[in-house]
Amino acid sequence: MRWDPDAREAKYAALRKVLNGNGFTTNVNVEWNRVDSMSIRHSASNSFVFCVAARDRGWYIHLPRAGIGSQRIYRISDPVLIPALLSRFIVERGNTENLTETIETEYQLEAVSYAVWSKDEWGEQKVCWRGFGWRELSDAEYQSVKSKLRQRDDRDKLLQTLSPCVTWDLRGLLERSSEFRDDLESAITMHSLRSFQAVVPKDKEVYVLDWQHPCYGLNVHKGIQRAMRDEWAREIISFYDDVEFVSQDFDFGLTCSRNSRFRIFGGSFIEAFVRDMPADLMSIDAN
Image (cartoon, rainbow, N blue to C red; front, side, top):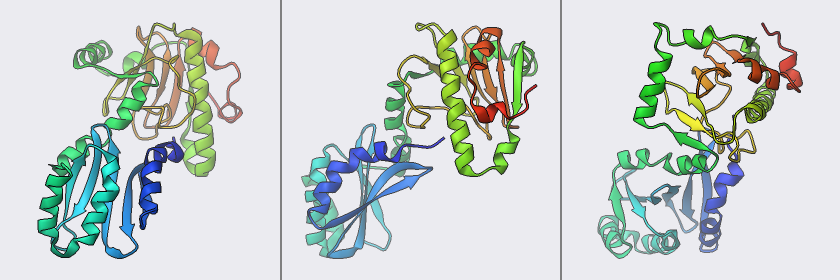
């Protein structure tokens, strides 16, 4: 599933405009197919490369220090200060160590470790996901769901034995072009969402379970509009993890396993799902 680069770059637009007007060149950095941060250079001094990033707890900035390749990471509360801060750094770059200490005080920078930067990296996106109905399960909820699903020796056995069910083998998608695969994944994702909306009451959530990553309660009626990772905390189609979207009483839902088996189960959900299925999914044999 793809990220929407335009939406994620929008938050940097105003800052880019000011920086470009003051002799800086800017480029957004993409990590794991998502806009992650912005690199900044000045036309008069290409020896320094700065980096800024918007995160949940504010903006972060990487400033060079004395020594080749050495940097410090700071949290800065107001991005409006960034153009003046960088201009000051460029103008007085003769003694970078002392200058960095001066800037720390004048611009009220909070030095942070790389660990803090990494921990906050996905915070902003999590806030966005909450707006689309994703609620990360508490420890107590997680343990409760885990206990119910592991009441048998094999965790997957409970969902595998629920019937009726329909299964598709999606391994052939790995041999298709990335464009075809993305288009079909998007079609299945949005069709699955509409199918859940048809059978899940508006005051109920579905569990989204992936034991290698955070698990969620998802309100399927809360506003997801597109098959973009900006709106989906977990992907419905996964070739690398076992993912389960299931009702709170586990009587219907869908699973996608790392062996590329995509399965829907529960009579009411199957009835909703098989109506108007994506044409390319209909062309794949089901059992």
